[in-house]
Image 1 (cartoon, rainbow, N blue to C red):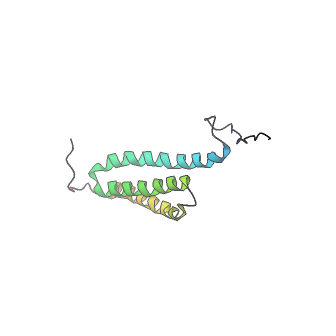
Image 2 (tube, rainbow, N blue to C red):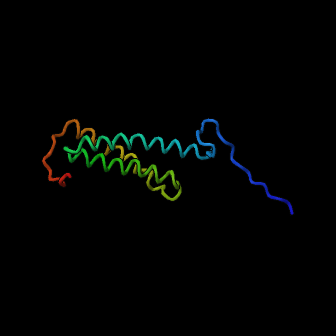
Length: 114
């Protein structure tokens, strides 16, 4: 009986990880596209804690924008319906910046801070 040989994907030179193959490069770029805005807007939520509308828009935008890209990266066929949600998340992020720039700090009831 002949031995089966396992075919391996070629290792790309631009990948810092030795086990990363060329088929995962697209996933890595999508994750990079998502992580940087998510971290930036997480800081914006901290800055906008006195602006409840801006903080809510940032939170909704991060959830819709980053969450849809993460889901599409995991399984494109299963989460194809989330494709149109990504621009909606971007609109919420822009609305958060507009609310932060032009809005007034509200006196909305908040949870006590410890």
